Length: 248
Image (tube, rainbow, N blue to C red; front, top):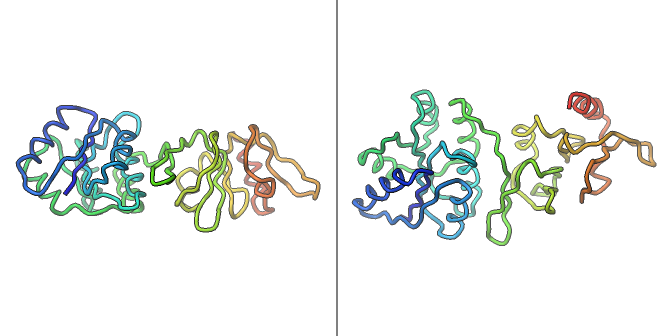
């Protein structure tokens, strides 16, 4: 089994590597010191298992696991954590693999033997129960076999596009697998639904105006590749869009 070790502290990575060296059937194929580095390494070495620290600067382990789950062949994730018993209870109840620090050989072996792939809903519910922040700082797109991270701060809109969602952002647009419903649930404090198929970043809306046909539409502050037809506000959403603009 190919194993990727992810922890921002070198001694912790060394400890895990040392323990794995004494176990048959596990080959450490890479290390990473943070979430973004982990995704880059994972895309190149395709690990079977990722030993993933939760508390890391920048992209934490929870968000990293979300993005690892979106790979074509997602690895099994085992969290290494120093979180308190309440967080651990939440993870254990949802069958998420974890190892308490300091890592003990017997616990690591057991976690590796029962490591299972996570799904986004399982990870989200466990993190919520453990009072961990689950709003991602990025969404993840697949481009030519690579994982591309798009910062939420740079996104203007999420538009339904057949089986996918088109993301319009400062550096172009990409398709992602997330549903509009799940994106609204996660980022509803920053985006507002203007019609059935579109979420717009409230901070990017300049005003509401009428088009030539007398329909309400949002006018954006910045240049965008969003088509005009996608900026029309459906009648059922006009009041909510106005409210969000007043409160922004």
